Length: 210
Image (tube, rainbow, N blue to C red; front, side, top):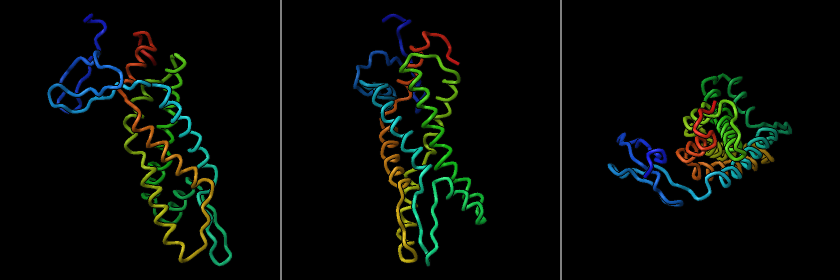
């Protein structure tokens, strides 16, 4: 095989350097030394994840604009949005917990969704956008810290406990959050960072993207 057409990858488990340019579409590449899964050479590397990512962005915006739920206690009504929950924790004397909730349920997911959406759109339209490589690097590092599913489970537990104390009405934001978690999980399972980096190199024509 032509040396210029080789695609080399380093195994994240044993650091073995290997050629993966021969992996057919739809097949999974495994390390020749330790047999650890490296990546899946998906048939649709851009279109399907991009469609899911657009849905994630839409539901994320809706989940943060509209209230998650409405509480009615003794005639007093209170609505709260996703980001307001972190603010309420901060004002109630739990700043550390508020920061953790804000980062894992709003900052990290939002950064990953919109950064990767920017990267995918740049690759799809074959444009060399600014800061693509740094955004892709940081998104891949922050993806494991986007814990919207854990946050949703915590809200469900809180709602069950509040039902005996107050009238709880789930809002549009809560429904949007459920759909966001579903689409976000589907996106995480479909993304292949190695394939994405390869497409990015092809898009740049061998040059360094900014």
